[in-house]
Amino acid sequence: MFWELDPVALERAVKAGDAGLEKEAWVSSTLLEWGSCGKIAYVDDTPAGFVMFAPPLYVPRSISFPTSPVSADAVLLMTAHIVPEFAGGGLGRMLVQGVAKDLVRRGVKAIEAFGDLKGEDGGCMVPADYLLSVGFKTVRPHHRYPRLRLELKSALSWREDVEMALERLLGSMTPEGMLRPV
Image (cartoon, rainbow, N blue to C red; front, side, top):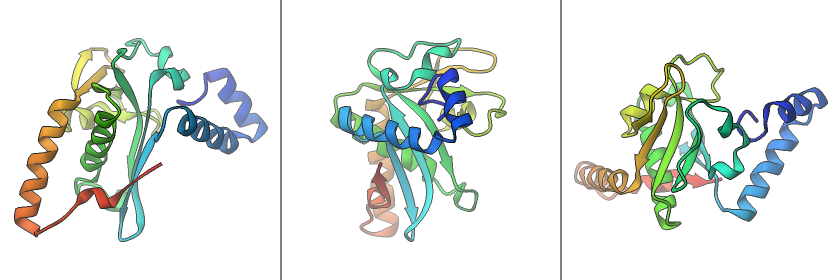
């Protein structure tokens, strides 16, 4: 609930033991008002990783960062996680590309994220190094929380190149089948 509630509301929810209900309410509300706000990657029907994303309007914590605000034409990539035994196999990149494809269909121009340069946040934020490795560029530098941006046109052309290479190597394969919307 780091992203979905402001710090005061989060503290209240945790004290009341309602964090799970708050998360469920946030996801339901976002789905109804805006659409899919996450993706889960599966390997052999086992959840292997996920990403969460939404317009900044749905993400109260986004305004509290020193590199705010998120650009008006972008959606915020809130968090991403790959289960350790599946790390290093490209699932994180595949999740970001799945988000990019979804958002292009909705007319979104870019994805932005607040990167974490120190990795001490307990897993709520995406490491800046990872974001840079999958094509994000720094648009607002900061010693701890730079704001990074991925232009969706460049993200999709990269994906098409990778899919063609995979098809040549592995035959007909659709990585999208591994991703399911939240």
